[in-house]
Image (cartoon, rainbow over all chains, first blue to last red; front, side, top):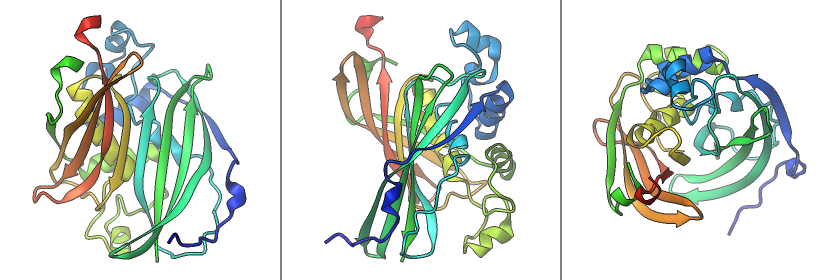
Length: 149
Length: 141
């Protein structure tokens, strides 16, 4: 039987917005370097332009850097203390390139509990949609945080 | 790589990556978590009962995405959905591999579904998850 969870349910349906975030050439090349991303389109602007992109290309999960810049409220969960990053999902809709300007909109997607051998954990899932300067959605990012008993 | 080249059960990878101390410092300087933190500071890691600084989840994801950008191309990775099972250490080989679990066509897209995993040298499973990759068809070449 699902556990009855006590938290601020009024947060459902509320969008928390942030940005614009300018995607610069320096940001993309520094991100690519730190993760060892190979490929000219991620590291060389002229190669990206030759390949038909608008600018140097951000690796597909780069928008996750920006998710934590959205100020999210405490959901006031009355459960546990230790919290950790349990999972992450990125759905890419379109390329992000240097020169883009992104806005973020986050909302509380779901809160649920699971009980296993190590006890009960509660999962808090936030979903963030990124759009570029033309309003085109470029990525959806889900972040899941687990709270232990 | 074309859709017709891929079959159920095919292996993708492995790709081996290492996140050095400096890589994680550089990554965190872009990302901007409050410092000191458990990703770059041994004392902060110890406070969290970790044996050493760990690789941030979003950096781990960026490393795993490279399996697909190297196998196919930038535009191929449509969905990467990961569960962080264990802390990922610095300076150790991280083995990333995937197995094709389904091939399907949805509208005009040719999609490959995969199970993906990041393991350590002792086959410890740090991260598991699924990915969906879109590939071109030879017919549309």
